[in-house]
Length: 181
Image 1: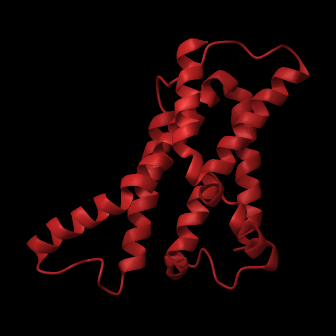
Image 2: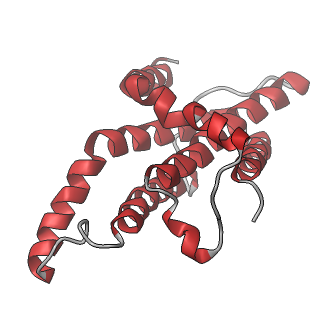
Image 3: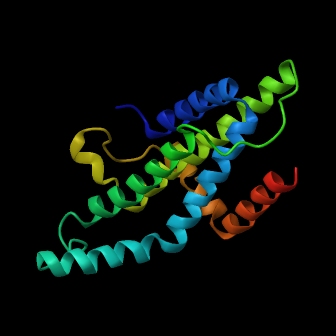
């Protein structure tokens, strides 16, 4: 597989095209859902995982977080939960904001930008959790270390390191915009 940052940029571009097709009112609803998912994972993800470990560990006779596959299990938990929430936000009847994009190039640009933001949030969060748990998918042959210099330089610019202190503020703001607009 190629460099990880190329995949990241490619996914952002793919989501920009998705944004053009769906329109920014729907994409803004997805942005809100993604931010809620990130808030849930950052605030309660660890507690949920420890609770599951305690419950299942009691039934199985040991902690699955203390075993050799701990990083893989933790990454699968966070990524599985996040991807499920993203899938739900894109599937079926979604949270949509009111309004129509302006006609012409400005509307296309607004749609593309909002789609690219969602791509940044989604692919950047996946990359963040893979990095946080030391890329436990290496055994699948999808990634082999080391990271390139560019990838290492991009790590501080992934969504969670930047947005984590402000997630609640962004979620409340977007919900208020949805309600009062």
